[in-house]
Image (cartoon, rainbow, N blue to C red):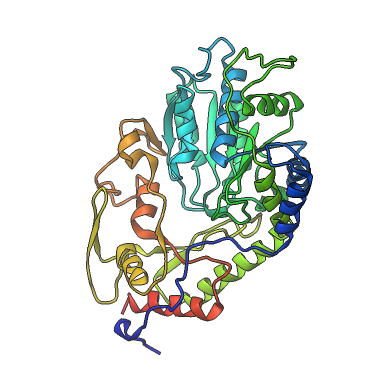
Length: 427
């Protein structure tokens, strides 16, 4: 039955994009830290969390750190030192180019710059909304000297990791897998966070499990794990006094935060199941709309369904114009756009988000190289070339896509109302 948009009343309690779901065990581990007076960056919670993560994910070593970004920074630093041992101290990638996912949060890319590197952005593909292997191959043809790839698994969906891993091996390049959003997801039975030479996960407040903060470096190398632990504690040497011979960081996780994550880890599979139920309710609810859900390889991969997103069909898009900080749209019967849907949700006390704006479109990185399947390109004002074919997939997904409320604390009846609100935007 048609429901007019003006007939909706705002949600009494705000419907969020994604919030933590706490269970109680977290408090037990926090209390343990208090009882033992380990209110520091060491203790049982840190040690046991590392063991639990390594066991669940299927890697040899896990190093618990303050944030996912800190984890990624150390991964990139270690990779740079491994590749360029003669590089400038404190900037292991100084003067080097690095291939990076284009459609992602900038935390995936910024640590490359911390280490003196230059990001080269690789376009996205439609099958998973992740790094395009075809564009990556093209990039290696253009920039033959590159030896490092940084890839993110967007919205909890595994990228074409096996194919990308093979391409990296063919070119003697290291792979860093940013699995911050995809903890618990797998491809061909292998967990994300294990495909790279270095891998990271995040426990940020909106992730599928959380400590309010926190992250983890994952590796098969004991040497790299030990080096990460050393660097994360200001690179203190094994001496009876404070001896420092290289640049270090204050990146170790708190024993309190580790306790929260330790309690959350027991509920990871439960959270994934709840996120999947949200995704499936949206998919069923939108089956008659001119939209599609964020895709994945349904035969070979298992996402963690962190965020549920939609992509509006091209012929169902009303006119939309986005500036650097504001957007406008022209309402059109039977059509809609992300701006209209997000504005409508916001007016009714529900939270959605645009898709990650591609890095090559960001002012800070706008002059960086960008490679799509056609070769070396630059940011364009239009996502389509003359023949009508998409030449910039990330820009197109950003233009037509949006993230819907995906909170596992959301009541199913509230989700049904979100579905009806979205439907009303196409009336």
